[in-house]
Length: 248
Image (cartoon, rainbow, N blue to C red; front, side, top):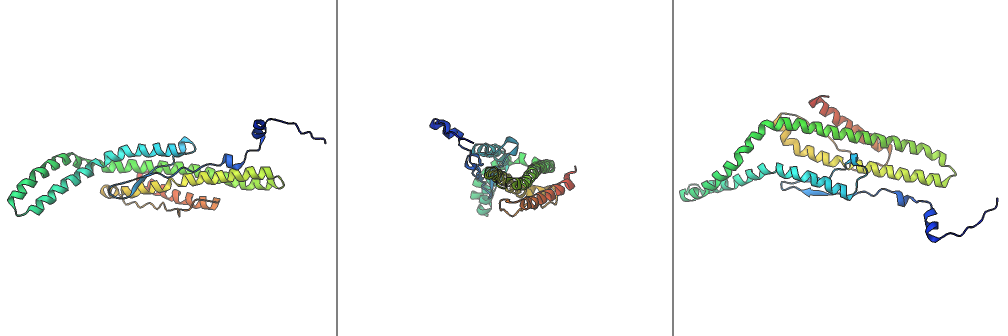
């Protein structure tokens, strides 16, 4: 067979170059979090329903969490505001002049706090809604992780077809790296969910619900189908625990 070298422009030659895995690989978004005044932090979730996450989507995700968080902190801040003058009253004992100066500030803070006591009646309803939401998120993650696990299995089987075909092997290995990156991004959503469960412990106690979800997946990014199976088992157990409380 005779081959001919046909001169082409540099731009066309560059366009005809095979696409490398560097051009196709997924870039992991940077982790974002906001520290809370009482300790801990709120972290951005990986929203798999909106495609491959990036820095912008993670930023907006965290912003959407901040607004309701600030609303939820309103009553605790009023409680702290009440405690400060109460401490002043206690410290003033038995000085009547100092007590008279501290009591008006205490009464003003108490009036502001009064509407917050009505919230206790609604806590059980909120807890059940939150558990249903967490279950829905876990089920979403389970579906995505199972799909990636199946994809990784299929790609491993295809490596046999690539014997003696370096270009195909490179494509399969690139797809494997992207699948592993997708799995890592998905599993990064588990820690924020565990954080929400930690923040819910007080509310669970008030609602009389005994639930201690173990979402510990080891922390390391999954690099194999065995790692993914272990994570899937942890999430499955958590979903079953929630099912036992809120029902199907």
